View 1: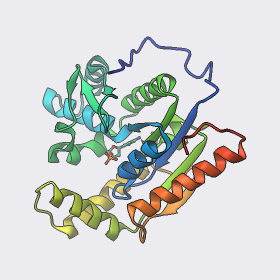
View 2: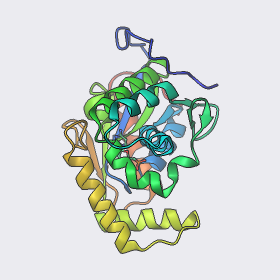
View 3: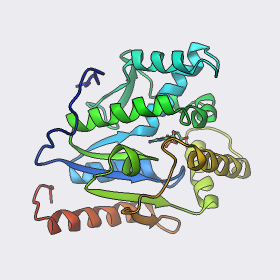
View 4: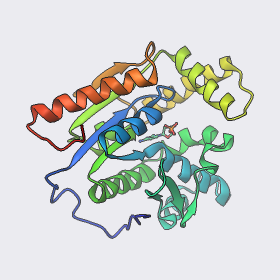
Length: 250
Ligand code: DC
């Protein structure tokens, strides 16, 4: 079922459901966040929110609308009108704009090259955070992954993780991912792009990439995806049990 994220939904956070369980995973590109978040969500029977896909969809909308970078107000209005939402019946959930699937378009090279700029726009970020909270209100058991999920979107999340890895390793992982999708990739160019994206992501004034103080930091450099997911799952189960909750599948 596709859940429309109406702008008219208000009162978010006024009533927190008893079984709410928000787990945030933040960190730079190439740490395996998306894969890890999706696997963790599956293991724990939770929903999965890829917030990078939201910024990527907004970027595709920007590029396809032929607006220029000075027309930020019009751009944000267009994104609001597109009513970004996810089709949760798919695994991973598919992002929709104007009810059309955007999952293929958001991985295109022009989107990847422009998304860092889009993610610096404060007005757009406020809209995205609002959407993310609406999603969490509708789907209160969620692993959400991005750059600002533990710091801005869900400061009261039950468990926060921050994944990191050495830049060279992150570049190699990204290159392998792209090669698997049939693209030719130069790893040194990939490293430069990753370092540039880190710089833009962590220096923007709105929602910069930071490690929340209360996050569990995991350096994934020498770890397989399975090892990372095992580690995160164990940490969540420990917290759930310490809190006296018994609401996870075994
Ligand atoms: O994780 P990703 O590569 O799909 O993210 C795409 C871009 O969106 C990246 O430049 C960082 C940005 N982003 C963000 O600023 N805040 C988020 N919560 C998620 C992604």
